[in-house]
Length: 79
Image (tube, rainbow, N blue to C red; front, top):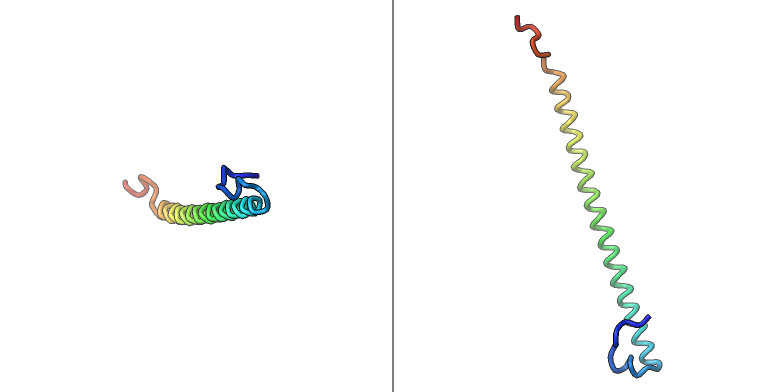
């Protein structure tokens, strides 16, 4: 798998050219792996944030339902 032109050493071929190509390909594979790992971490942080939001909203819903239960029904005792 060759990437681009590569420069005079790679174009000359031979052992030096193959070595340079292998070094470049390894570099790009490592960069890609690093980017994928960073993306995974970012997505996990987003998931955690949304789960916290969900817990907060569920707590607020529970609090509101409790408030509703404590209220007297409309029209009760107003005669």
